[in-house]
Length: 455
Image: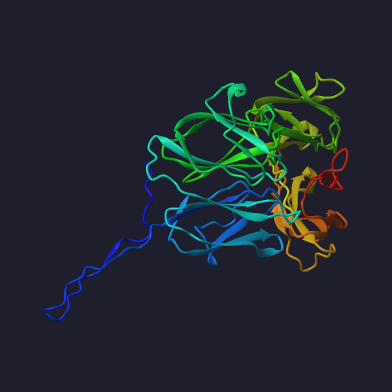
């Protein structure tokens, strides 16, 4: 049974007795209003990580909240609130959204940051509902359309594998529309979404279990991963949130050929499926979408597949994730490194990732400056090693949009092994650079550019 805690204890006043014998005694009872409840969801696909504040102070430890992350359902005193959203951009922090409201006793508030930063449509969507006190054997659910680029939709919530032809949608919703908070018997369900008036399913949750006593907001948010579905569901409960992908969501993988003394290669999965054909040195393939699973990967010479330089390398690809496999080191000691990519672009920042795949360079320092002058400048990354098969990389570093020069030196020296020249980096873009040996091996160090460097 769901129990909602009182924010403040019940206060009983003392019995006041008058001094005179003719005065009557009076019992005065003062009560504190029941609390309210609040939950916050980051549902803006191109917004940076954010902090959530309430009346100017950080709320519930909600710092650095990423896209598709939600708070738990918190109990708060019934009073006036200003809820703020503070964006954590590469250029600093800035309060970008606020909403003022009076939290009413026993009312539940789901507050979602929705819209897009790029088109100035970012806003706070506040939904109020009255939860049931007794939810044993039931699950309370509110569904909201929070995907700005998706059209009006029909939302079906049925028993698993129910034929939709005989069903009516639970709701027809345009962007920012929401259902009431409804109680349904706990158990297994299937959530399917179609364009309004159509029987074409564009999102299918498969079987999802709704637990007894749970209180959920289910938000259809913009899909930032692989697959054809326009949305992913954020299912935010009392304690935590999960992302539910369409059942047909694949994994995505590409290959980068960073072995300077190797010929063009084919990449073959499970000894049967050619993922990439004829990938040359410095080549960056397109992403291929495959079912999430564990694969045995062979890398063979394109000219003669009997020459296998990597045999049955095991890689595990998770549904909904995006990966880059980098063939690296030298041909005689070739290795394969699998890295998880982050395809979500952030409107306020340029996101830059640098990978060290140059055996000849050894450990390096990496400088990121406005003009390439590194005298007296502290490296952005120090003593980055070359580690075959588990390549060192910077991760995605957020930078304010602008002009930059990346300089690489052997660690502890000011000798420039590589300098990029001026790179004009834009917000809402992702830039990946891989340091590699010169063709055939050895110096000078070069770069493979990927993502928005070449888009």
